[in-house]
Length: 495
Image 1 (tube, rainbow, N blue to C red):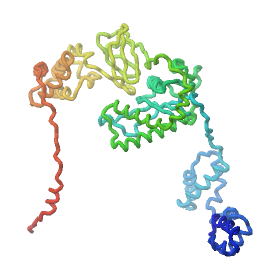
Image 2 (image 1 turned 90 degrees about the vertical axis):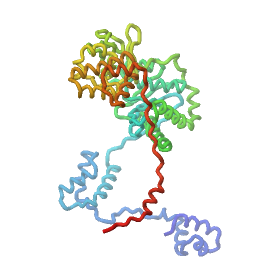
Image 3 (image 1 turned 60 degrees about the vertical axis):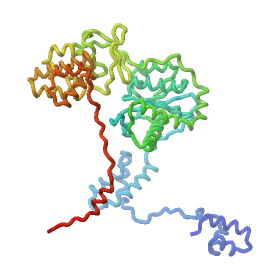
Image 4 (image 1 turned 90 degrees about the horizontal axis):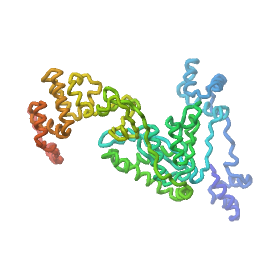
């Protein structure tokens, strides 16, 4: 088959060679063929006939009107669904191998007769005009902290003009996470763009029909930094397309670096945070030119950050607990019946009373969780030991596994009430003295197979004796030569 390249070469050689025969030979074609293309003055692709006829009979010709009517009624129908319908309606007429033919026919129908598809319009951004942000889940990357799964989100912040990006780890799409993420990004950036666009987060955007566009707290955050808030339309993530695409590229980069690292485990949260910051720095290193253009037009930061917390006034119940964001936390029993102010941050909450911070408690993730500190209630629990066994939050009253082992020993040896009394005496000792010392005392008694009693634990704890350090387990290197020796031995089997 003659190619366009051969014909173009022929046309060039015709100007250089004396005869058509020589030009045709040098271009690699027959003299008769060369004469044909010399006359046409066109390449093979220009004279090629379009293939617009069928090479085999259309198996769906008789039923296409029926198929077309169904597609007009519901253009979302898949070819596979229609094919299964045809096989049921016309048994034996359509074979499984004809599905691909129907899929091509439906694809052509969608392109020529189907409904118009959504058009995405490329946007032109100006330096310092816009920043976008959104939350993205990192769970599929299988990251662990000290061997334990670390399920978390990253609040992702992007400048669309330069693609400069940064992020903050968090655990929910709450306003506290949003506020901390925005402020961390702006202070790292060193300036403030004109506008901030987010998706329809309930922490920032009111539901349709609400008289106000944004929530009061989000409006206050934007006002503090002089940002103009923007939101995308419902079910239109493409309007936040730069940050959505950045999610994909960022997580892919994290995955690749973790592969090079050879491990997805980190010693602690700070090591993981440092890892992400180094990665963001590396990703931003190739965006300096446009980023410097943005820096020139960014507005100044305010004098201070806005407090990224939610304040609540709650009353302490008779159980010495407070309920915050659908979770239960204990406070000192002295505050029962009092109203306290709670400052809810991303990862902890502070309890304030009489203008004093009296507690800092780790924030529980999700809903229906509880965090009960035995030191808050032990003074009254030792007076009411009968309440321990069926206490709703009893499992929170075992600081370590050895405390639980001691309670199980008491239950085997004593009645329920005495077992509770003995265990609560140990727990009371831990609250009065030192939890670590009591845990060490339990460890020594268990290691010595001694009888565990409240008096024995107190004696050990107050004696000042320290348990032996945990023995290091050393596994010797395996000598593979020993296996070779086994293979070389001859075994004589006597029948």
